Image (cartoon, one colour):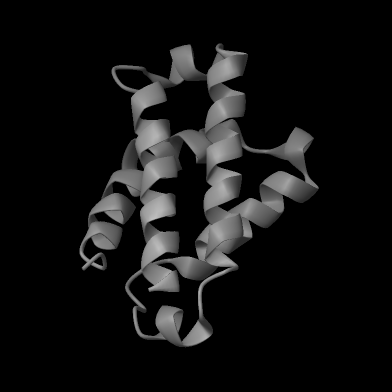
Length: 108
């Protein structure tokens, strides 16, 4: 149950990112500091929540990039000034939609 609640919270953060970036291209994204900061915050929160999942749960779902999510959080938190906006945009534009679909399958 704990893991399910965490997954639902992660999906909510993903939904926020998708809402902020709906119909936005990279040029608009990188020039909108509030959007960038909001998305980076949500991505870091996702990584933080992954840290709260049970290891057995993550091991049972190897199709989810748990360690990449956690790793992105660490990069954001420990090197905010060095965050690669191209990478962040690629994650938002491509990866996060796939991740959302994968996570929704885990919710009972």
